[in-house]
Image 1 (cartoon, rainbow, N blue to C red):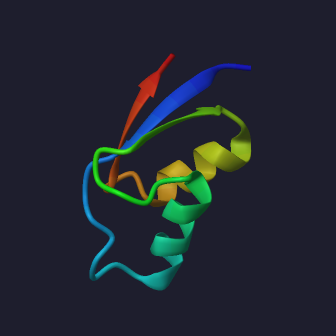
Image 2 (cartoon, rainbow, N blue to C red):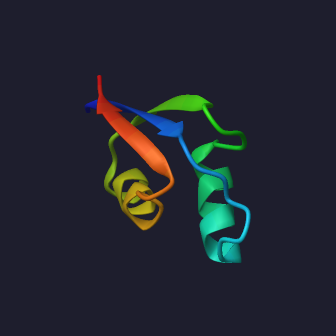
Length: 59
């Protein structure tokens, strides 16, 4: 399965609690922190919900 690199580019302050929990579930807690995850349907769905807060790169 393909991997993707997800980087947090915006703060979660003043965002709905659901988006904050999604960011934590992805492993993102600070701006400019990056994680590499498998591109499973569940991860892709979470990224779509917070795509305005993250940058995505294919690896």
